[in-house]
Amino acid sequence: MTNIAGTDLDVYPLNLGTNVFGFTADQAASFEIMDRYAEAGGNFLDTADSYSAWAPGHVGGESETVIG
Image (cartoon, rainbow, N blue to C red; front, top):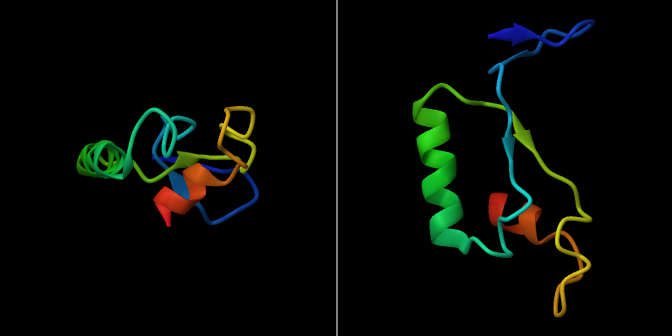
């Protein structure tokens, strides 16, 4: 684990980017990815409400909706 300086947070040294969640990875696939990441010790997700906002039919926040 790696400590985020100035905090009590210890995070996995490799974060999981979630920009495809709710876009090219549906909920089932996204959950499978998160489950595998957590099984490997991961606890640090990278997300932003602008992911996939540029794609037709998306408004942003799809990743956060899947992560829930």
